[in-house]
Image (cartoon, rainbow, N blue to C red):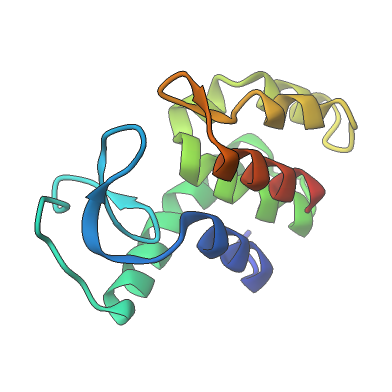
Length: 139
């Protein structure tokens, strides 16, 4: 399954676009729509087209992680879980209670409480993550 445009837009809104490398609240060098890696260093700049290319490449690993763990989810569920996984990482997603509950019943309303558990960075609740988790759950 592939992320729909709705899922990509959710990701873009909550990641934001930065064309100059910056340190995110977790202290990781980031650029574009949340791209991280050894290629992101202080002073690095990219174009919007390069940010789009990085996003498409980066989303692919999150799509694979969600597809491998939850092959039967619907498009909205997939579109919510890919941005979540993109943000927290595949390892955290695979070890999460959110995933365990989604595997048991992807429509379980108790999953909302699992999204809420992922609103912190560096031990602090971040308003942006509060909004992001609410949007992911609502989708």
